[in-house]
Length: 225
Image (cartoon, rainbow, N blue to C red):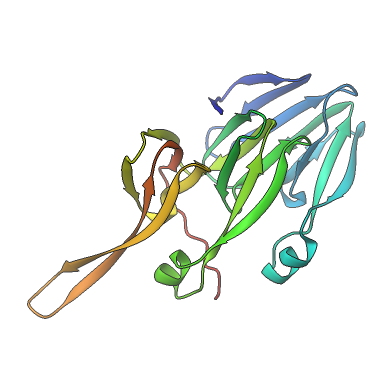
């Protein structure tokens, strides 16, 4: 797995990409007929040239996705021309080049786009949302290579590599991504604030080995559960 942090230009398998904007970054991809198609969630499309063809792509596990309230169809782009994406939020765009079989777990609603060779799935993490928001869990997107994956991080994105058994505790809203080899658990810290009162702080504990992405602007999505 190779993390590429850029605010300028990047090329990958016939596609030329430019990152513009300091506060709400925009990724513009120049596609060719020989380029691999890319897929994305339709609401992040900012603009495109007429020569870029837009089609739909049905994801695996339609039944489970519908029950979970997750998208069952993503949008796919191919052809000649430019297309631009933005998550409409302050932050930083990062690109991850996944090797064959490499798997990355990404916090939901922070996926930007991926080449069509990347396998896109999801799983549910129970307990963390329950502890923080009174719900029953939240979803994590799973991407398996080979291919290129683009993500949006709130604030700045930092990467930490954990050795075998090495641990780090992270505020739940600061988690962006992790390699599949990194285990994630939830811990509760009880803090005494007075003689008879106290408060609880909930953190995500990550255990290596593997790489971990942290976003400096903590962000929580209320699930309504």
